Image (cartoon, rainbow, N blue to C red):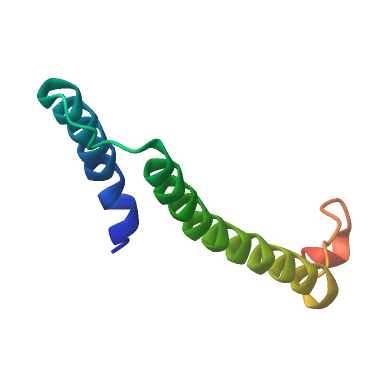
Length: 81
């Protein structure tokens, strides 16, 4: 189970509630730099997963073209014997 993906909506809700609370109470509780930093860390954690998946796809593609079963012609009689 991917907990980071499940936590994203709650993070956005928490950021919105913090900004709303700061606006309603008149206190400066919301800081943009903290939000940007947290968002960048979240994107970076997702980016690493995406890059690993892309690298795995490239390796799989290379292995199947190099070592995989060759394409057999459909119209050749010897294929069906």
